[in-house]
Length: 114
Image 1: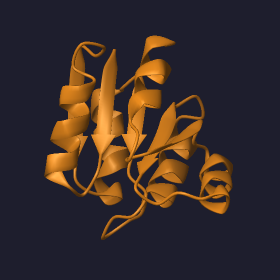
Image 2: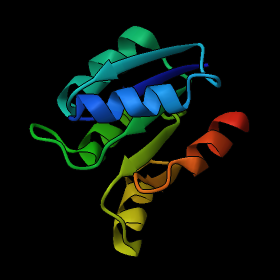
Image 3: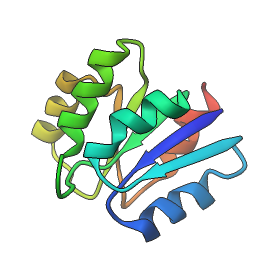
Image 4: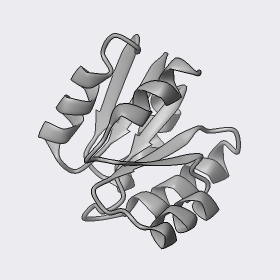
């Protein structure tokens, strides 16, 4: 399993990678949504874990770009911002799921089910 972690916080990327280390073979990282499409093209991950709020390009726009490039791309939003409208917007952008950073446990279920 190859995973791309897109988050503007290096400590958060490291924490997610460590938390999921036993479930993934390779993890790739980038620090902004603006880098996500090129990282996706380069690494062809099985799953993308995408932050929502980033400086240059947010996770929703990055999700749309990746899904336009690869309609079968699997993307899960991982964000500290939670709410029904954000979840709905993320799903409309092409994400298959939305996990709050306050509880990363659902990520393990998502990866284990892959």
